Image (cartoon, rainbow, N blue to C red; front, side, top):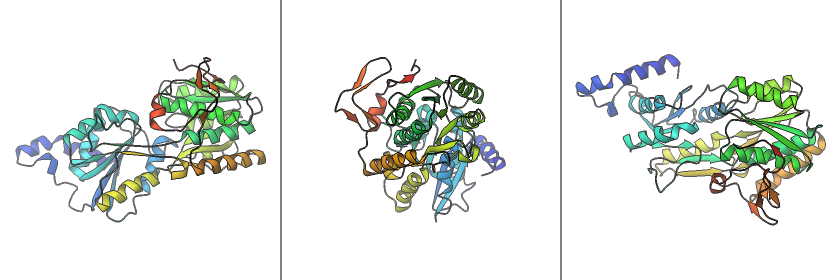
Length: 375
């Protein structure tokens, strides 16, 4: 979908009120439907589709559907988490005939997607995240997500073998439960190699803020961190800045190895192609779409970037062994005895917590060894 055509659709949508006065109901506006496929699926991204990060991972998943018979894909990138996303969803429905929409960004859900769910009860909406609740949200809405904390644990395993200073760095956007889990998982993976390793975290306060991400990365290297990872929308700045300073990097969201071929160790990636194919298969078959969809490495929702040339043989062996355990199912990243970095016991001896949405919602701590604060 070219930008020019996206603008044309938006302009046409603005004139729908005038069309209605001539007897054309906006919900059945015929433009864009003459050659419609059996089903049209819409994807909306908060940033560019080639950001080497969150948006690219979703766009790669959408691209995997373009050869599916009977499915037409419409996309729009750089859509802010404002009323603009409501206009985009309405445009996809009215002008393209979309019957299933994936608004992929965290802030699209409430109030924007929920408003469209109420306005278009016959259209299905599925949001990336853990925010849908069957007791208070409509049934034409739902959520999907992956257990990627296990991927960050594997990042930590490789980082633990690679670090010489025993200091890791983490550039994070906001201290929400999923981000905290990723930070904790990264350090705990490293501590499975060496219990003395620490991790410094810096929160930028925004999902995408290149200047602060570069400043945070430089600050971490200045403080001795020699392996760095992140949880921001686009890891591109973090990866390039860290590698430019001589530090090794572990990726997130998508494969960033082309940005730093010699310094990229591995990365925790989403495999949205698997998830989107599941939804589309149900759509084509006329089956009800699931409202709550979750999976991890063993389910193919998450994958790891290939190990880079700097990864040692001991690191490869522990990485492979740990991954094999995860693929069996039931692997617990958070297990006792474990304290928070404020000295509070979060897991006693024998306690282990699976990576589930319920437990994620209650995670409000950083584990012992993380230098930083959730405040």
